[in-house]
Length: 205
Image 1 (tube, rainbow, N blue to C red):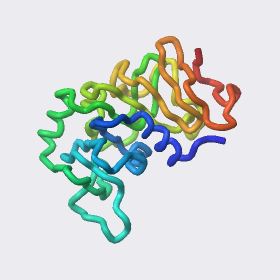
Image 2 (cartoon, rainbow, N blue to C red):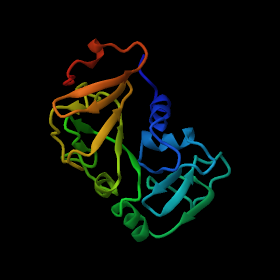
Image 3 (cartoon, rainbow, N blue to C red):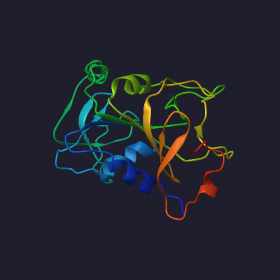
C-alpha cells in the first residue's frame, strides 16, 4: 500500500536532525513542519524572510502577515525571526541552510532535479529553487512516484528544464525511498506491500 502525503512528510521528517536549519518547498514538503519537534531544536527557513517557522495554525488563529513561501499562513516558534528576502537569500547562498526539502517533477539517476517549469505552461517564476539546490548543504526531493499519465518521475535523464545538476541526494515517494547513485537508483526503503513489480520503468541498481 502506497504512503499517503502525510506519511511521505513524516518519513521526510526523519531525515531532519537536531540543530538543522531546513527549508521546505511548496506542496508535500510543507507538511513536514507538522512532524518536527517544536522545542526549537530544528529551525525552519522560508526564503520570503522567516527563520523559525512552526506548523500550520489552527483555524481561527491565522495571522495573514505570517506566511511561508507558498503564501500559506504559518506560525513562528519561540526565538524565530523575520527579515527581508535579501537577507534570506544571503543565508541560502552563504551555505547556512543544512537541508532543503523540495517537490520534484523529475529526478535523474545522477541527482539532476527538474521542478520549476513545464514547457508550454505558464510559470510565474522559479522562486528560490535554483538558489536552494546550489546553496543548501543537502537536497531531499519529495514527490509522487509516477506522473498522472503513468511514467515514473525517477528517470535516466530529465527531459524537463533543470533546476540543478547532481544536487539531489535522496528521493521520498509514495512507493518508497530511493537514492540516485549515478547509473540508477538504489531502493533504501519501500512502502508496505510495494514490490519490484510496482517500480517498473525506473532504472534500479
